[in-house]
Image (cartoon, rainbow, N blue to C red; front, top):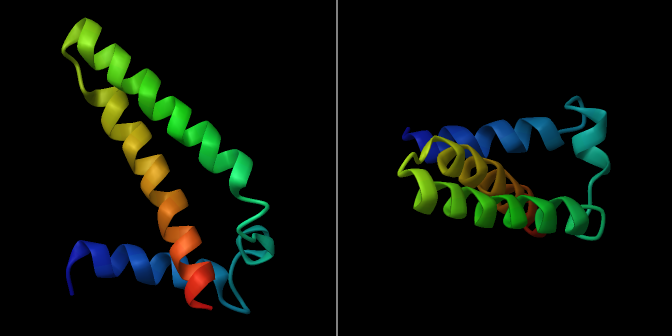
Length: 78
């Protein structure tokens, strides 16, 4: 199993009946605002990278956005 599969399984586990109550309640609609916020933070991370050459913030923000994408994908799958 590769890391992407592990990541997918974590999200599936969070959304399971005995998973995290907050994650189970989420829908595409409830995740719209957080998704937009994370996308905006990616843009800020790009700006920081362009100004400083340091990609640490960008990597973190891309990870947060990837979490949003995976949540939407799992919800769609359900």
